[in-house]
Image (cartoon, rainbow, N blue to C red; front, top):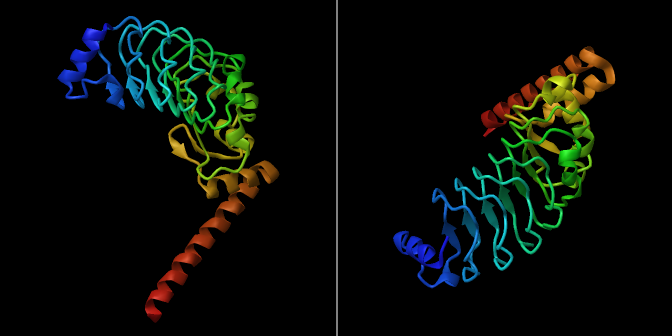
Length: 247
């Protein structure tokens, strides 16, 4: 990743040849082994480093404008050296060899973390999530997580317990833990009060209400609550139809 190579890439992609004028930089699929020589690219907001041979996150502290960092499909063993990127909103480190989520609580506005297809396994490996104040989208799919105690860690995530306009998206598909948590989906919804999307399906108010009824009174209460919602929706449709007739 030489300065000459970077300028040639900018030229080929019809980007600015003056480094600091670029707000996006495409450096993916280049075979780079190290992040270096980017000091002049101070205006970059979105940096693509996907599918290289990068082993370490480094030399990015001067990118004060950086919002999105894409490092999926590299050879990273850990998340590090991000503390100066206090405007970072999105971090993708999927398809690496990371064993622990760490060094991201220092990112005050981090909203999206994609860390699928890594080597996370226990509740301890993801405990850093509980300290992330703004995190709302978390993709943990296809790791090796088999520890049911992860639910307690996830329940401590600020955006999963506080009122939030969008709620939280969580993906655990492909982890052994799903089979270890009895009534997995129901219990995740009960524990994570602000969960709006779990794995491959949204959590609608109707499902949450039925799940809470199930927790209180079992299958019979769940059935009764579901019928109440069906009747309510039917009545709403009938009222709307009658209103159209009167116009």
